[in-house]
Length: 171
Image (cartoon, rainbow, N blue to C red; front, side, top):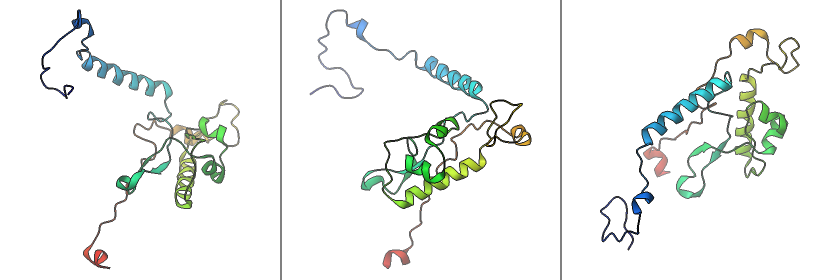
């Protein structure tokens, strides 16, 4: 059997120059700092856009074990965008992730994500490309002053759990 996990290496028959092939993790703390600095630099670069990236849809986890939980998916389906009245090419420019492969198998998930898109659209502060000549969908000057960068996930997804009672179990 092959050695498993972090135990002692039994009967080590190493090849020549094996020290060169050993992978060490001494750069782990520095890598952690480097990743953190890169995240902060990206957040400063894209401000006032959300630091965590575009909004994601609500999807249900696969298999019987996990299908009671909901989580963030990859992107909104084209049908969800169509019902919400947002063009697929415009969606990506205003911070909405799009996944053209995704299909809606139930009306409940479709309606939940359409509602999510409409709520996001109502909260969105859209900066004009030319401040001197704002277009129809752009936000007003008062709203632009209120804009702050969001650090956490955009509209976080909550798992609503129903508490089971004995009365409900006996029915």
